[in-house]
Length: 92
Image (cartoon, rainbow, N blue to C red; front, side, top):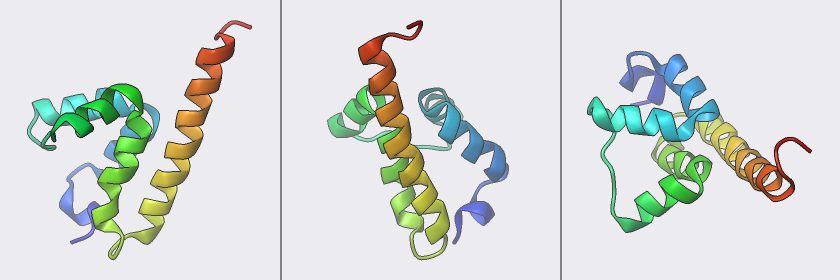
């Protein structure tokens, strides 16, 4: 089953996961839409949430390959952008 057929508000969910991955995954856990994993899952949630979202997209590779590719692009750009902003400071 593809991602868009599996989730009710799929486009809103995709926008939330791309822009606010920690907040969206926390909300999905509270509402029962996402099951949390073990230690590695929580480390990903705390340290690199964009990468966690990209790894969570992998089961949809056969039905939505474009979705997975875009998730990985957002993951690599988002994690790199956050690291660069944290390194040099937000207001500089």
